[in-house]
Length: 122
Image (tube, rainbow, N blue to C red; front, side, top):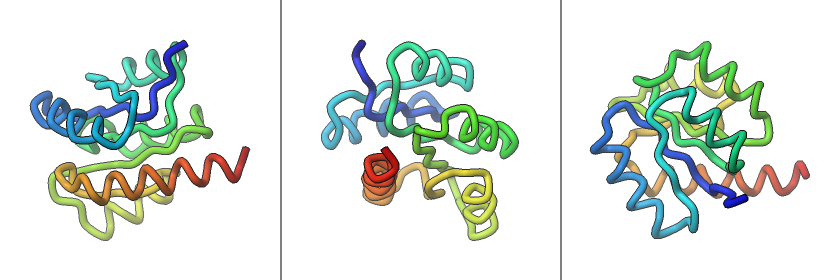
């Protein structure tokens, strides 16, 4: 099994590929998912530490469902223009963080926090 460190799921395929390429400099195994079903498939087949999930791709109830279904995976939600209300909603839904989909530094920091929390919980 080739375990995935990070799964990138963005509504814009160009953004997804760009973000995945940037994250690949920090993480060994980065994959791109086109939709919620593909996220599930990759996690069930290969596992994952973190999913970087665009809120244009998933409604908040889907985020809540994914975080419950895959409680050992950290979910970092992204959006073109995240605001404080969106951030609060995603945290209540079980996500680790919510940040702009082009803010690689914040995404990497949130990913590191998620991985650290997973190690502590294990």
